[in-house]
Image (cartoon, rainbow, N blue to C red):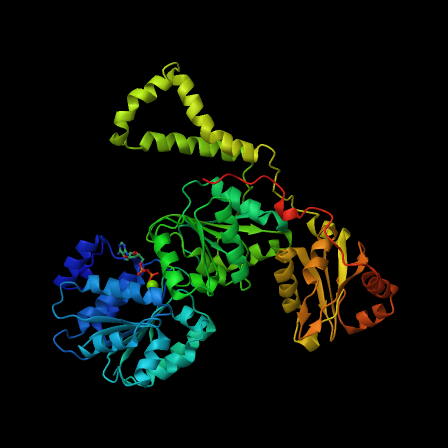
Length: 585
Ligand code: ADP
Ligand code: MG
């Protein structure tokens, strides 16, 4: 069996490894460390998140630099401030027995002056985010003209985040003959381009197959109606009482909305997205790391920095637009050798995406049913029993015990157990006793959607810079409807159409009431109701198609109907408010 010693690492590092509790090298460490120690070469190393890449480049770099010199010899670029800090702290630990070692983190959102003065004292290794690094090189605060090693960590993420230019600029200040070590979880063509542009005959190392999800993550999906997404999320959380999870949403708005609903419903949740200040983000991440938050609702961009081990579940509240992103999401769990579950809540219309993702991750999804109410009650009951069993007695209650005994004197152990459990059970039971089955049978959803659907006319279109996706987003933003609840969106030059289920029509019309777009009053009217039975596939698009319809009285009557009518007021109670809310827990 290979050991860190047999990889060629020297004593101070072996000592640090023992302190860290690493027993055997991970695969990427096995494959990378000896090469980097033995020769001066460029390398492209592909391995999933959580496989120990930091140590794979950290130890060789530490062993190769000269800590007696104050010259900056190694540069590590990483995509986010969180990762930058994390890598810095890891490298410091790896090098804790190297006298004179100085590792400095350079990142945005903190005092540039302080960072510059740390650099001045002589940093052999700099760990940096590209933006701030470029800035400081530009201001001559950092000199990387003598570096020998440059690591591009999480290269795919850096490119995703648009750092190509910054990286180019930074590297132009570094020597030609340095070694460049690129680490990445995936190898999109942008990364291949970096390898081609900035590296010379790199050794290539791949751990596992490219793009493939981590081996110890299982993938599940739950098929529900789009409108039941949130209910399904709650059930998944309730069915996993010890959940420690990241819940992914597609937009900042949804992220915020879902987090708020969860908090209102008594879950330990928080939102993480780009509209938060760095301070807020730090606070959220701190609460997450310390487990005060069990459900971190995040956008893909915001979640890039999350490097927390022990995440039990990744929940895809909505699938990402780019299915490639799924690999990154699911890679947040199953880290450091632990098992993780990646769950996807899908509606019928997204069902086919599951197949596409299976191809990418080269693993099969398991279709599972959203647990029903009784199953959840049962799980919670046993969870409580176990909690009681494992609770250490707090002796501060001792002085109260005689009175408590008195109060409960008449009950047998049997009766007491029944009562204690009823306290907890009743809460869940009451909430779930009339809960419906959320699972969708694999047919008929889209049928139903179009049968009861309403078609709307809206007086904005491409001229206003709206493609159909934009219009869909706009409608969803104003109505808070789910992705699948707004469909058949067709954008023309100066007007457009879209559909929703008939039951949402009040909501839609109200949502647009008084809305202006490009300083024009937006008008939405019902174009026609409940018919889109166009024989075949039904999806009509394009100009020709539209022209035919222009004279269609559907539109005209719809228009006058809207105008002639006083503004619709909500007769029915808002659907959002109905249904039992669960008590805080
Ligand atoms: P990656 O960069 O590939 O996403 P990290 O370098 O962040 O992964 O490592 C993930 C976790 O695994 C960290 O907590 C790290 O300390 C731990 N780790 C790394 N190498 C080993 C090892 N050989 N044995 C045990 N744990 C390790
Ligand atoms: Mg890493």
